[in-house]
Image 1 (cartoon, rainbow, N blue to C red):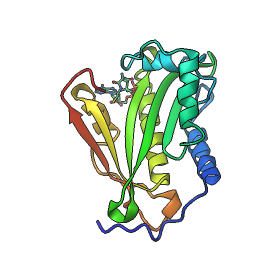
Image 2: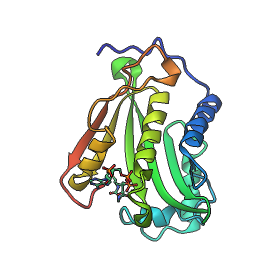
Image 3: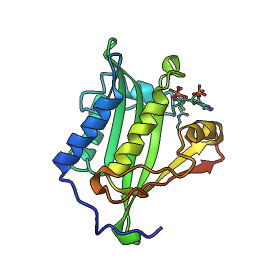
Image 4: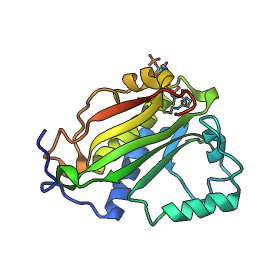
Length: 196
Ligand SMILES: CC(C)(COP(=O)(O)OP(=O)(O)OC[C@H]1O[C@@H](n2cnc3c(N)ncnc32)[C@H](O)[C@@H]1OP(=O)(O)O)[C@@H](O)C(=O)NCCC(=O)NCCS
């Protein structure tokens, strides 16, 4: 695939956030809201949901806010952390991250890395995981990623096959609508069951 970024329009950070907000709104409904992580989400169960994925450790509110401030808004172009809220409970019941690796190859292209995807165990099987992955894929395409990589344990490969991260997929990049082949998805397997 010949790749050139010269045809890509660069959106301003504010416009990018606006378009991401549209993606999130489109994926939300009367019961569930997908939105960016906020500074006050410590109280709303963000770490509880991550603790179903792996060891979170003893993260205090102060630790959480310090880490949040390191990332946002300073590095909001690199880190996209999406949370899923049960609107009635006003509580976070899922999360997913994509971050962007800036490269020199492929005409200074960008690779997306999907990480830390979780849906609370009592809500699984309701298509929320699929919706989360689709959001992360759309945001990656909006940010002109030429590929997306997911590291996952063997028992989750089936899920990523189902959400077609495993195969190449074609999504028209909103930021560069001349290029329909901008995104390709790749899952890299890890052997250790503890690694998600
Ligand atoms: C993986 C996970 C995010 C899926 O979320 P979910 O909301 O239950 O998934 P969905 O309801 O959208 O499932 C979509 C399809 O994938 C299937 N699926 C979900 N998880 C699966 C898994 N681990 N293995 C095989 N199939 C799976 C579902 O059965 C469903 O198939 P169907 O459409 O044929 O019924 C969720 O199981 C989870 O949080 N797991 C623990 C954390 C984790 O391992 N995260 C992955 C990090 S890489």
